[in-house]
Amino acid sequence: MESFVCASRKWTSKHARRNQSDRVHRHRSMMLELQGIPVSPGVAIGPALVLDADGYRIPRCIVPAADVEDEFARLHTAVDLVSAHLEHSRLETTANAGRSTGDIFAAQLQMLHDPRLHSELQRRIGEDRQSAAFAVSGVLHNYASALRRLDNPLLADRAQDVLDIERQLLMQLGAVTRQPLSDLSEPVIVLSHMLTPSETANLDRRFVKGFCTETGGPGGHTAIVAKGLEIPAVVGIGDFLHQIAGSNCVIVDGDRGKLIVDPEDDVLDHYRERAEYRRSLAVRLAELSQLPAETTDGVRIQLNANIEFPHETTACLDRGADGIGLYRTEFLYLSSDDEPSEEDHYQAYSEVVQKMDGRPVVIRTLDLGADKMGRGNMAHRENNPFLGLRSIRLSLRNLDVFRPQLRAVLRAAVHGDVRVMFPLITTINELRQARMLLNVVAEDLQESGLPYRSDLPVGMMVEVPAAVMMLEHFATEVDFFSIGTNDLAQYTLAVDRSNEYVADLYQSSDPAVLRLIQHSIDVAAKSQTPVSVCGEMSSNPGRALLLLGMGVRNLSVPPSALPRVKKVIRNVSIEQCEAIAERVMKLEAARDVDLYLLDRLADLAPELVMQ
Image (cartoon, rainbow, N blue to C red; front, side, top):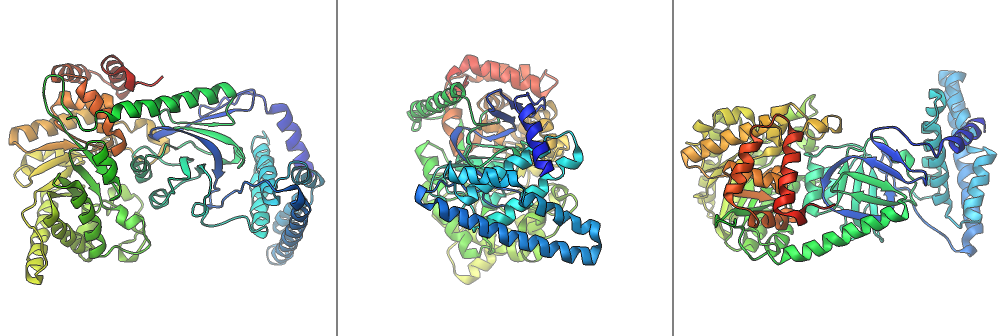
């Protein structure tokens, strides 16, 4: 077919050129390097499992020589069935919408029966012993990729037609599945247009060694879950799936936000060395697990952990966490199709509290938007969900969901040191409504005769600039504050923290955000209200130094970050941290702040700065 021949010629002449895009770098050896947003640290190396935008798996399979003829037969049957379907669509569309519209399917039929296509498929199946599905996936993805690189936009648009043919053939071959991540049997790197938080939460960590997505930002729930699961992850790469076939060896660099496809030998060796360095560093840092998070001048820092799932408590204890500073309960909602019952909440909370064995556990109530609920009366589409019905606003509007959660918290509190915290508090009235409902629930439990505690401390997240400005008044209403730097940065800088297009603006080290944090710390000190920082900012060792210098004595970080943060705490004095904070507060841009903090970290804890 002319378009395939044209595409192949241009591809042959252009494939060795360097792509000048700021997101893509292609080496002469055809190694492909893409830049995204690092959201979960670590290095992962393995074969790619590519999911298209609809969640189909592009299979990878080599067949025995004895099965080659069977694969040819399966391919021919699939081609015949797809051909019949396309011809039916052509005739029906022509009758209903005219010949010009029906010609869309005529063009697809041309592609399907193109001799060059069949020659390449026969070579892959006959000589390379690829399965029919694997051959179809590889060949048609290569054609689509070549078409998309053409200067002619009309030909480039035909790539979608090619991928449509691929999908239809794969369906006829029985190779695609709507649940591609549920039947893994070998280690893979997942490459997808996007992964929802619930899909991420259900990844099988035995086989999924890392993932990369086209969309997403550093503060989204998918990023948070990935960090909680300790799966190296990069998001917000942009349109890249069409450039990758399922057989590729890929590297996920979750530290620097890179995806490397078909790495050259020296690059592969470099990343293997880095992976080994991380493993050896983890062994050395593990020796600190039972030592206190104490500075060189004897100041004890409370170092807690953020968790999403009860099973994470094991990692928290193994790494010496002083407690749970943030238990994100929304993943009870995201990891199941059914709304969690009071008993579901109670069992999950009780498991965590009992495992922590007297250590404090801060349970945050539901922190999701109506756009994420996807069920019942709580599910709504909103034009701007981050400024809409979410978090405490959603809970106060849906008491039939909020009350069971609060009942479960009070019941679980009999098993240990439990504290409850309300998210996204903006006004005094919201806080008072939530506290009043907590009291009402306690009265209900008393009447029911179920064991419970009602004297647990009540706190609020500080993550809205309006709350920061009114913090002196909130201090008289709560027992503790917890600064959520993720949302505080989002609302201060007017940046959607899950949007890759403005990810460069989403910086918790921005001077404006730092000033709000400093004001919050000062108000907490003046009112003698305990304050912690539980946002992702605190998990960065350099930024942790800054927070100590600003006056924070309680940090809560993902379990994976506990060893590194404890290491940096034990390497510095408060005087050194205060000098860092004094210098930082004079800087004018987030980039200047981060470069300075990286420089100081290299001086104070050089082994944490990987080359």
